[in-house]
Image (cartoon, rainbow, N blue to C red; front, side, top):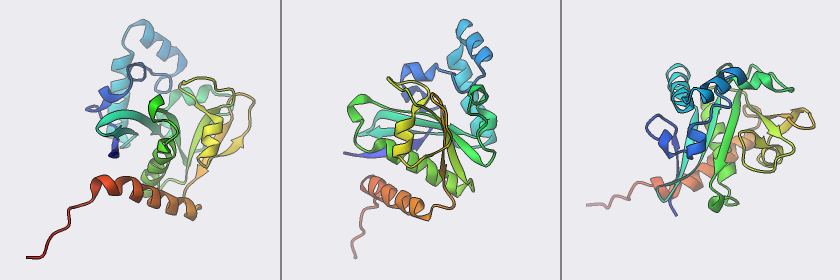
Length: 205
């Protein structure tokens, strides 16, 4: 089974689920988001947001492919690019952090460790870019797929609660100070990507 994680761009944005391509929950503040939906242009707003973040900050997501089929994605950005984050009771996200906005894996591919690998891939990207941590708002009462990730899932992949709340706790994953995490990232990525990115061995002449 060939698995790969590819940076999100405008070219592969159509590989996201339709409901996610037209969702601007995180990308706009509540008032602007509602206006975009009423005007029938959330997909255009989503494209504009991704384009702006790519130009100004760089990579802000990954798409997961299994045997060339898109089966999941993850979105992340500094809190300055995520207006909705200020609407949460446990905001703001720390200034030294990047916000893990949302992620999704197709039901048939859940339970295979892809969620953990996605977080580890984001962690490796942000370590290279000099960030100290990832933070996310969790849903402590999560029941079905939504824009806010289940708090239990975040805790399971290494996040710690930094600001408790009965519904939306804020969680944090330290990067720079957790050397064992970095080693886990390297090991997981080597295992994940080794099968699909190995160069063919050259035979001696």
